[in-house]
Amino acid sequence: MRTPAQNAELALLVEVTGTPKPGNVDRKHDLPGLRFEHFLAGAVGAQNGLRMALDPERGVGTAFERSIEGMADQSGGNTQFGALLTLVPLVRATATEELTRDGARTVVGGTTVDDAAEFYRAFDHVEVRAGDPPEEMDDLDVRRGSEAVPAVRERGLTLAELMEKSADRDGIAQEWTNGFERTFQAADLIADGDGPLPDRAAATFLYLLSREPDQHIAKKHGNGTARSVMVRAQEAREGGPELVEAFAESLLRAGINPGTTADLTAGGLYVALERDRIEP
Image (spheres, rainbow, N blue to C red):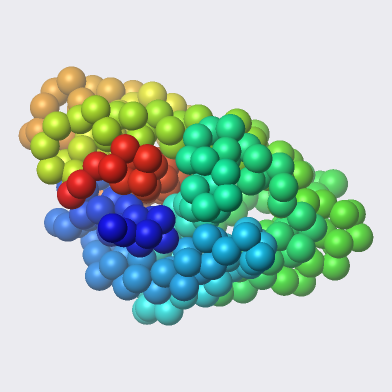
């Protein structure tokens, strides 16, 4: 039987094999400088950190930082930062609580200032797109990486408190504050679906994209573009496979990448694999 860490790695692998996922890397589509095999290598590289998430003696932040360090050990750069930020607390919940929204809330609520410091150190390993923080949080800009750790410690902020400060503009931070609502919704869709698991992942990705604006798109292209992509995803779902493929190609040409939606899909896959024992 697979361990939770192995199911988390498998979730990352299945997520990237789901095809098509409009705007994202999949079996048939690459991005400039970021290819399918980079995601495979990133998933495998994250395994040590994911195993660490099973150990209650190790901090959630440390497990996350190590998973990012391993993920980054390939030439493509940032492949699964947000997905691992989703997965690590869920793996910890599996080990120490239960894999439910309440279990995830307990893990998040138990995070510490040390976890927050390790979260910032993870940004030293990869370049992550992030918008400008509010003026009062300038010293906590994640783009500063480990240089922001003294400010984190001076303010005494836990990782949960940091996520609360970003929840209004970051989709994964929002998951941390609401018990991973959309992640568990994705898991239910995957578990209730039919067909091969990568196909269920692709269908779930498109559903999530059609329901709420993707926050990664909003950071890079603005809220208007994010809402437009959401509406186009609704139309593509209604129009069938040919329209979905055309939608995928158009987002790739425009350089529009619904990264948050992919992260939520990976989290949903983990829950479906671990909680519901869905077998690929």
